[in-house]
Length: 101
Image (spheres, rainbow, N blue to C red):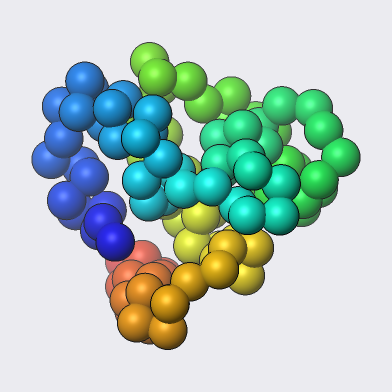
């Protein structure tokens, strides 16, 4: 599990590799084998997630700029992912911190 603060410290290249490796928040949704950013295009699965990402058009070049919004969207759609209880608790805490800011 990676926090937003940790990810903000990454260089553009490090963040791109993190994305390519499929690490949180770019991990794969098991039911469709797509990650968060793969839902930004056309498709029929997870329509609510697609609507949330539609205007962003994420790419390697824009990851660092879009990271806070992508991270928040990933947390909002936690229910699409299978997580260990400890991971879910961490995400819930971070969501509360984001809302408080």
